[in-house]
Amino acid sequence: MPTIAQQLLRRKPTAPVATGEVHLKRSIGLFSLTMIGVGGTLGTGIFFILSQAVPIAGPAVIWSFVIGGVVAGLTALCYAEMAGAVPVSGSTYSYAYATLGEGTAMAVGACLLLEYGVSTAAVAVGWSQYVNQLLQNLLGWQIPVELSQAPEQGGIVNIPAVIVIVLCALLLMRGARESTLVNSIMVVVKISVVLFFCAVAFTGWNTDHFHNFAPAGLAGVVGGAGIIFFSFVGLDAVSTAGDEAKNPKRNLPLAIMFALGIIITLYVLTCLAALGAQAPEKFKNQDAGLAAILQNIIGSTWPGTVVAIGAIISIFSVTLVCLYGQTRILFAMSRDGMIPRVFAKVNPRTMTPIPNTVIVMIATGVLAAVVPIDFLAEMTSIGTLVAFLVVSLGVIILRVREPELERGFRLPLGWTIPILSILGCIAIITQLRLVTILVFLAWTAVFLIFYWFYGRRHSALQVGHPVIEAEAPFTTNVAQPSTGAVREAAAARREADRG
Image (tube, rainbow, N blue to C red):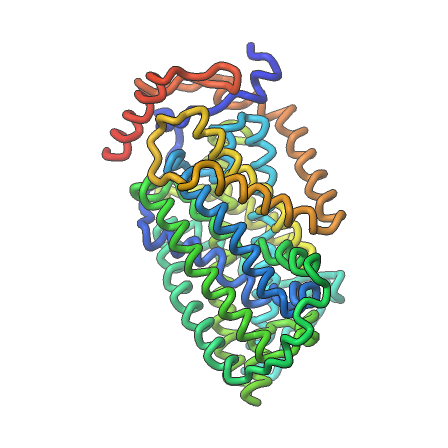
């Protein structure tokens, strides 16, 4: 019987997963993986988060996006190395399990569940705003406030937000390949709509909007970065597809880097266009902001209608990716024994975790129905930041512990990029509201208590599982595998990938 310290520090091998485990179908190629990253990212920071960030940072919110993009970019490179070295489902949770141990992995799992669950609710609330804008433009009628806003904002329940979550869950139950195909189509549409917005908004450019560029100084810029950072969650979503990606060691790193380049370019371009077309003070509490900006420039509702349609498609795509990421992380944790087995049950026809998806649909639907968007955005940001920090730390640890491990991509400049990523994440976390940090700590503590009473006793490493020949031996942070065992494990993985 291992000691408590051994239980907390035990690590999963980085070799291929054991036989007898539940697997998902490998059906997602490089293009679809890239579209998962873009689909889960492009839309949240553009279509509605400006109304939360501009009042804090002013026109300098452009730098907030740049700071967020730089930190996300550094972390994306770390993700690329980790995804190429440990190409499995579960994202940061799986990386932490392979580098920092079971106890840390459980804490990271709490971060990811917060990140994806809350972000699903947040973007669903944003979707509700644009549905109302479209209905107003087309029919001259909106869904009553009581049925389209959270109680804190004068409503009773946000019905449209619940509807989009249910629709996304039903699509995911059909299968990963079908879901990624629909997502890819929606991503192409929303990129076109974003470029349309920029083309029209730049015709209303006014340099006076940038005169008081940073009214709150550096604190406002970094604070704005903390709010918008959750819009980069899609980068993490790529790595949640490790079990379903074709040639994951090559395609996961490439997809992460391609997605990063696309979204940073479009974010900064759209932010410049929006601020040039509308005075900063008008962004505060503005619903469906980009549609309203175009309507004010043109003096007609049709451009706003186009943007509202694009936003509805775009935010549906983000909700789909966030919901997908949440279910796959729960799948990986359940397969490891950390949470009940119901989350790892796969439908034999669709090869998707249907009970898992239904449970996530209900939980996120309740959040979206009754919680306002500003608090949801901050809670998602802190979960994302902590997850990004752990990945960067994991890169350093894995390089020291398993230097012979085959990597599909290797970071340049030694440890420089992971260290800068860690420092950037910490800097943004310190600018979040105290209540956000306290709620996050309380949530993590609750999850660790659950691990103490359930996870550590039901862990696959605790109860034992069949292993394939040449799989690296069970390891902990105390007992390390030999170099020969690691090399054999790398050879077994290459053979598995070719098969």
